[in-house]
Length: 291
Image 1 (cartoon, rainbow, N blue to C red):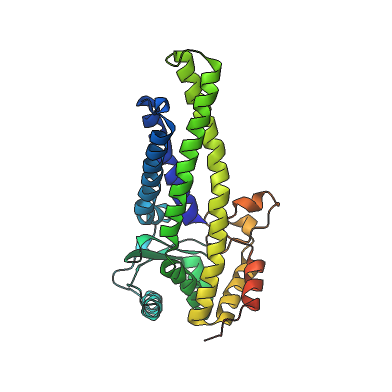
Image 2 (tube, rainbow, N blue to C red):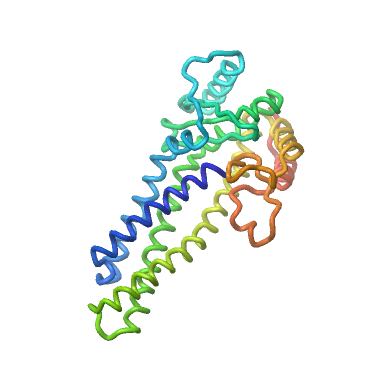
């Protein structure tokens, strides 16, 4: 979940800055077509700035250290395993990082397949068998191979566009209905406040769609890992996470791989990962042939 939360948070911060720019430049006075064009521009720029910064922000947020020269056997094994998976998928070798945390976690991020990163927590390396770690790594490599971060950026760009466009269009209608003078300070004040409130509301609704896609891509990454290293290894890795990690005990939003989603039905809409039990069921029902 960490990489998704960081991506969305950066994206929303950029949108907030653009929202101020739009207001100061008087975009609310433009016609609907011009507003849609500008909303598209700002919406996709915000999303792709988030994508381009994702690797740097993710590394800094967890204090990850990129392995350039392995200093021990674990680091050598980690690099060799990821290299083998990359070759199997005909992917460029990603950067590999370890960060020190007790939680069992791993994530992949980056702006493209040629500029990707796989980061693994020390807790995952210390608490899983190597077959299970290999399955987790295969899951993350599948995210890279599927181009999930780029697809998320494109989806977020579309969502951003509609958030900006619809919120400002409705704000203009509401503000105009409250004042006969389009240039009055009251009109501008109402427009600004209403557009900000509507953007927050529509951002929440947009995130529900983004999280739905995030859950969908987790099933695809699980299937990709099963194809790469064998279905049973992936199932065993998920079972290990389910047995060791109680999601309610995980710190913040860093339960990227192990989140189980044991929450209420409404909050399930905002989960970036499906419950582990459902992921296991999906794998058990799949026709993937074990390696």
